[in-house]
Image (tube, rainbow, N blue to C red):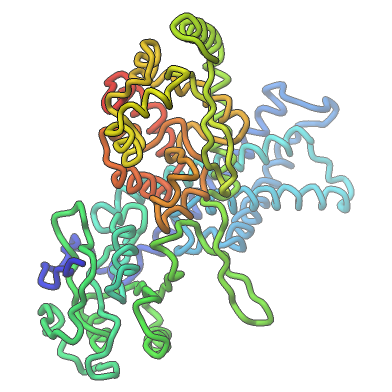
Length: 523
């Protein structure tokens, strides 16, 4: 175990205007969001009206245009849409700028609003609305509201680089879980948190000290009773966060550093300490309190909180991706394969012919690997080895040992001439597109592993079961077989923890082709 750098300098956060420090930027952000939604809804309704009555897009031709009627209707519906968005927490600052849930709630709000219009049309006489306008208004409002929020999110992410839309944050705890949490939250662009430092999860004096000297919080404590041995926070970062004090100094630290959020690593505190800390933080209306699940460092999925007989209970999600993320990922997979099919079919035929000509044996090889939920399946590849590969390897004990250690051989005597070409160009993996179409794999994901390899991931093995393995992925575009096994595991975990559909698109269409053409680590 390495000692966390308790003497590291305080994390420097760009200076921010006084109004922003006091939280008015939240109101500004919410006002901009309301204005954007209103503009997008109005544009959607207006576009639907133009297409229906002037663009010739219609379901029934006998409905009059009545522009004044639709204008009044649109002016009434815009506040209704905004009210629905408010009820769905789309203007709650703490639910914005993170995850796909924001888009899901926007979709639900637009759908609920349109259903309300349909219901009203049944009960209000002479309320005839063109069905084509209804359908297009619903579709356009969903798309345009989502697009507006996507653009605003990109703007907010950029502003976060300059210290805006971020919350100054303390991490309570200095154990492995606290370090893992801080390492994940360090990217303020996506987390929205600016980490100031750690607070040790123990009391020096056994109680909170509101009279703690504010000037002393900048001094790095050296008291051996609470300086904790743990992993270095930034393994690939030149700076480490300081340990600013123990729990007794928490009130003074919050005041001195203008803390807006406190993240508590639950495993770092004893039950009595957790209760005391929670009791104190609940008295501070300007400070948000966050509790970790206690499983973060070994499990990457989110948690669902359910109430049983007034008792809140947390349930880990079995899958890393929510329904919308899974749908988008599946759409990208199937669409990409469908567009590439005219080029793939002749390539499959040519490669199959070369394999049969070069050596005896089948064209395809099936490898048993683990998929989502731990379900085993046969991953297809073009055969690249001779049929008597086991006999060839048995004659080379040194290579057999290298294979057991790295699960790869740089110089493999079992590989055929055609197989060497297929491996260096990654064409041997093309048949896995069939596994993708069957829903067993995805185009982008962590590397597939065999049941025998699972134990090498240790507790991280649970994370691999929450996503589909990928035909390509972060490990492949980062060096492939030139990476050590530990580096591959780390890259897989990093991909799973930080998944987004945009990262998938970047890996698939921007990074994979140069990696394949460069042939780095391919053997």
